[in-house]
Length: 192
Image (tube, rainbow, N blue to C red; front, side):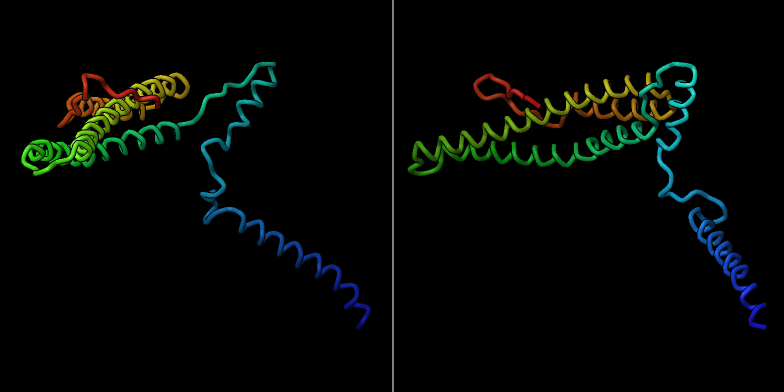
C-alpha cells in the first residue's frame, strides 16, 4: 500500500496546485466576469493606437480621453458654486466699508494713522473684489480655450454641457452683484 500512496501523492499535489491556481485566477477579476474598477482606466486601451499606427510606420496621436471633459465641467461648476457666496460676502464688506467711511467724520480725536489705516482697509477690500472679478474673467477665457482643444482632441457630447456651464459662469461674471471701485482711478493688476 505504501507504494500506491507514493505514486498518488505527486498526482494529487499537481491536481491540488492546479485547482488552487484556477481559484486564484478567478479571484483576479470581478464578480460574474466583470472587470474590477481598480483594473480600469480611461487610458487602459491606449496601447491599441500605438500598436496599430506603429505597424504601418505612423506616429500615434497624443489626445486624451473624455475624463478631461469631466474635470473641466467639475472646475466650472465649482466656480459657479463659489460665485454667490463670495459676492454675498463682498456686498456685506462694501456695505460695512460705506458705514466705516461715513462714521469716520463722527469719531472724536481720530488720528491721521487711524484714518489712513481705515482708508487703506477700504481700498484693500475694493481691490480684492476687483481682483476676483479679473480672475474669473481669466478663468472663463482659459475654460473656453481648454474646451476648444478638447473638441479637437476628443469630440464628445459632453462638450455641449461644458459650453453651457462656461456660458452660465460668463453671464454671472459679466453682471456681478457688486463691483469694487478702483482707488485713485487705478484698477488692480492680476498676474495669475
